[in-house]
Image (cartoon, rainbow, N blue to C red; front, side):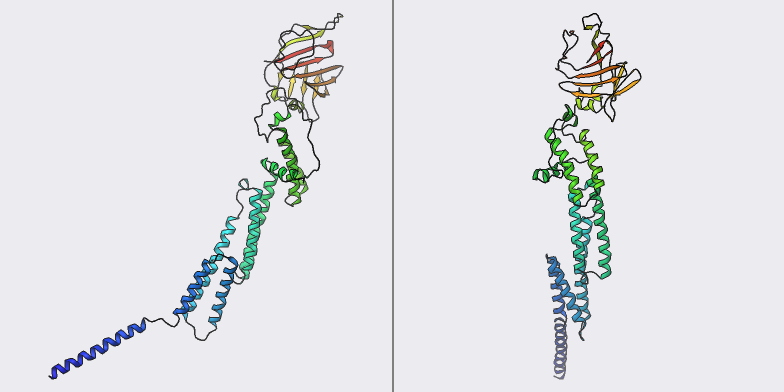
Length: 403
């Protein structure tokens, strides 16, 4: 009986012990006094991260920092709560900094050949907005020193974009920008050179530059519009504008902005007028001659010797005279003398000069233009191009025909 009583007593004591242990475990699993606060901080941090409005996001971050400062001033505070605040604030700042870094990186100017004026102007606008944003984030995201450093770096990027805009503007390779400028200014009544009109273009000019008349007019006017606007916007100086305009006009008149196939292997009055005879290079054979025998019968056709005409890009010669182009216009040389020539255009082109004691002329006849001479020999074919050289000495005339 005593043994049974003793066993019951031991079982009671053991049960009480187990109950105490279980009770302690349950108490230990209950929320600690700072758990709710940490949960609130974590919730605020998540909301801050998900906030799409930058202004509100910055306000919420500032509010979180202020709450942390208030908590720091309390006598009773928990390290766990302080850690949660610091972590949330750090992550909030990092999001702002990362976003700003991405904006800076995306708006860094790249290869000038891949940039356009429009793309660079947009980058400048984005970078200026970034400077404003960084300044607004002073004391919340950045320290004063950090703001100053970032502002200097961003301004350097802006300056580089501005330099590249100048490079893009002064480049005369892209003719489309002149077309666009014409559409934006002249066609809207805001031409930069007032009233304009292009007429009496030399025969063959449009074929030489590979443009229709409308395309030529638009490019010509657009060049002045483009650089006039660039000066107004203070992107370039007047001197830079004059240089670029001159360069662009030169490219325009030499076929660099061609939009159609250029075929100048023909008698082209414009090319000949500027002293470029490359379109005439080929075989020219003498097919007829004419001269005055002083027998009272006037000029008469004679037997051709079949001589050839020498043609290079810069000169035309029949061995007695030479026609050359120069910056001052065409010149004819013969018997050791040179004279400036006149230039007359109708259905054919006439270049003539008095050289020494003789008068020389060179006439260019395109296909299907008939030479106004009577009794022409059958060797002269009006369906082919012809060059006629005359001299006042016995009115000697040579007819060269392209083979």
